Length: 367
Image 1 (cartoon, rainbow, N blue to C red):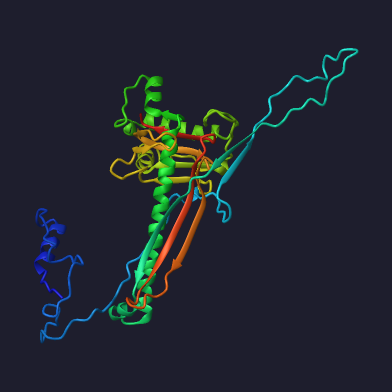
Image 2 (cartoon, rainbow, N blue to C red; image 1 turned 90 degrees about the vertical axis):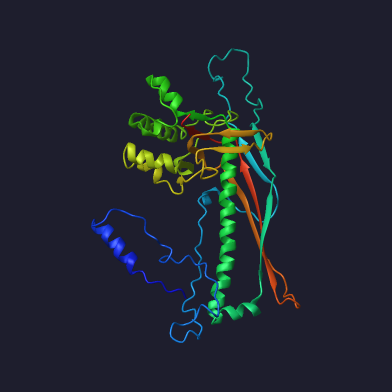
């Protein structure tokens, strides 16, 4: 173990913290351990005889379980069958009341057929992928001091696979969401709207720092949340009239915009009714990548057209507009390899991701 005398660092940072000396660079090379050491029988010895090997006094299994931010996109699991069928019965049109204006010598035909109008959608795309890990218990024993310690290590290995599954589901969920953005024309360009109504000349870069604009943007998002609860064709592809009850509403806000709203306007920017809906309000650090958090670039599922959308700050949609309707996970383990004394464990994943453009969906940009 490397031993460094750090009294000079202690004295230096104490003087800086007390204001006795001006701020200066602190050399942390001898202070901070970066975990890059490789054990050696010549250097990792005790400091008295310089002969006996130092022991590992504590082993920390570094593992944290990851939570999928888009877990609410899981609609329903089904084990048998392969195709998801979605049936919609359309509302009938009103007719004139035939009890008015009756004429002598004529009859009103009350057996005129009026079949209900029904449409169906079939979702058939499935997306398989897998993970695998090799475990060799016999030789791993040499690295641990007990069966419990080795068991903790193997549990962490399997836990990291589950984290990889959760991360894959989150990223696929983002891709599913981003594809809907690329497919739909239901967009509210907040800066364009605001400039048109007020005569301002704000841009995507300056708008978040303008208090009046941020108040307007928040009001428009909250207004959409309210309006989507009424029956209309305004918030979907226009093929059918839809409404979204409050409990089925889903709102996703870009973290950068949400924090600006809290700072520029007020702490509770979005009204309590919206954020209190179970699983409805999710803050997204980014839509596709953290470098350009408000931008997406996808090839649309409908026609393969490469589509770029920038400055996206929020999405409001019906829970049935997009998501995952099938989540299959098959975990299987091979027999022990007699020669190599190892076995492989596989995680087979399969989902059915979908976009239903006839459901309510609106996204907001700073364009």
